[in-house]
Amino acid sequence: AQSVTQPDIHITVSEGASLELRCNYSYGATPYLFWYVQSPGQGLQLLLKYFSGDTLVQGIKGFEAEFKRSQSSFNLRKPSVHWSDAAEYFCAVGAYNQGGKLIFGQGTELSVKP
Amino acid sequence: GAVVSQHPSWVICKSGTSVKIECRSLDFQATTMFWYRQFPKQSLMLMATSNEGSKATYEQGVEKDKFLINHASLTLSTLTVTSAHPEDSSFYICSARDPRGKGNTEAFFGQGTRLTVV
Image (cartoon, rainbow over all chains, first blue to last red; front, side, top):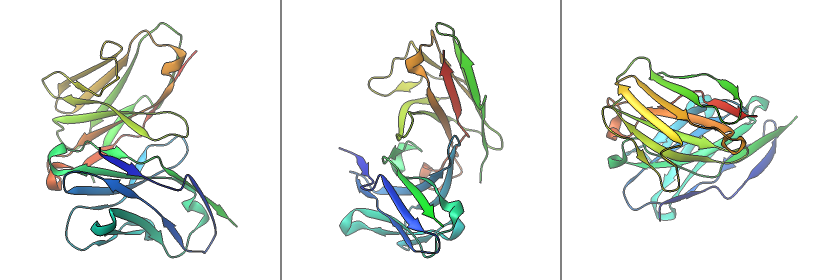
């Protein structure tokens, strides 16, 4: 079955510390992978996406993610977290022939300590 | 990137009434749009795929007679929650597939609609 797992429901990091949010997927076709961020009561903002090519993807706001096919993972990283990064983060997977239909992970809530 | 606008941002309605939510692609033509539902502190669940000029495709467990989807033009899809009940209260988000996107997979999200049924 197709699925996306974000093992960490809630993570707290100190401002300035590094961050890694985990994402594992199970998908029959070649996956297209996305990370979105959602502030409370707001829609989704795309942070980055992976379709093909270089497995290390750079996104907005200083985020990056690395696609590891052997581990079926697409973890999101940021070297230094800012207080404004506190939000809900969703990993999602789609496929070439699915035309934008995405399967989302459960989300990871990020809190940032001053 | 492409812009998708969703309206209204929030709505409160009485139980038993119907509510219409609009999803518009502002700078591209979207032959396919998607409707998702998000309960508090939970993930987004796909409700249905809206195809311009044809019937929507609903995910398993979604009542098509309760959640009416119309995609009458290449820039507008509407979701109507009919005979709304408190359990329909949720955050509804649409996305539109940009056919210019790579791999036929690029989709852009609206800002969401918070529906509260009282």
